[in-house]
Amino acid sequence: MLDRPFPSLAAIRAFEAAARLGSFTAAGRELGTSSASVSYHVRQLEAQIGVTLFRRRPHRVELTEGGAMIAAEATNAFAALRASFARAADMDEARLSLTTLPTFGTSWLTPRLGLFRAQHPDISVELDVSEAAEDLSAGRFDAAIRNGDGRWPGLRTIELFPSIFMPLCVPGLKDAATGIGDPGAPLEVPLLGRPDWWASWYRSLGFAEGPPASRFGTSFSAEHLDVAAALAGHGVVIASPILFSREIDSGRLVPAHTKVAAAGRSFWLAYPLSRQHSRKIVRFRDWLCAEAERARAEAAAFLECVASAT
Image (cartoon, rainbow, N blue to C red; front, side, top):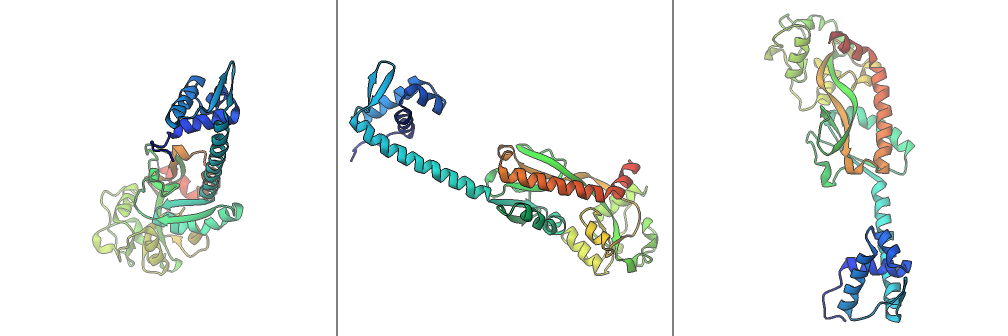
């Protein structure tokens, strides 16, 4: 056993490549360095272990008996390492970990994920829903759905669709919500959803002030919970007609007013620039963009209302 420090991996790698390829020059090309660098590392290895590994001939090198023995072991070891790296990469490509905002993930993405799995049964999906903007460089998540302006350093971002909102309610409450267009007019039903969204919606109608606090019913922590309360007939909710298009298409929710307001933000798919060629991310990106394009087409009437008001 050597009573000296273990040889450097760079020296062993240079020796293995030179032995396998039979040339310092070819080894340098494979390793992205020069033949002189390969020769230097090999000499350092020889000096450290006290064994001559190559016989230097004009324009070629030959393994010594000791060099051939070590080369066989080194080649097997590096082949096993390469196989391990390949298996790890295949395992990683078979699992897609996503983080998304709660309402987007719960109400829009989850009902559609079965379509992605049907197209790509070799990729399993792990979905986390959270308000936090997770650090995608930490390695826990492959990609995220975020809301904002799409300008996040180090990330590739693709716009899915804009954040828009309007008053929605069950059909049985539409008559009771007739006066909803005036924040000061009497209203028979409570308002649900974020007060700042209601204030923004009323500003789009030309009112400087939003509705008084007395107009609001129960306060929930997320948009999809507000909508769940609206579906139960507990009030009129301010929510996205894109995220809740299925509820509108089925007739379970109807617009309580025709006005659609924009938040000035959009939903984006985001992933690290370093992972932009990952096979699983590319497949998910292409599928998600197609679904988002379909959602924009289905919501064209609502989007046109926003465009006509700007």
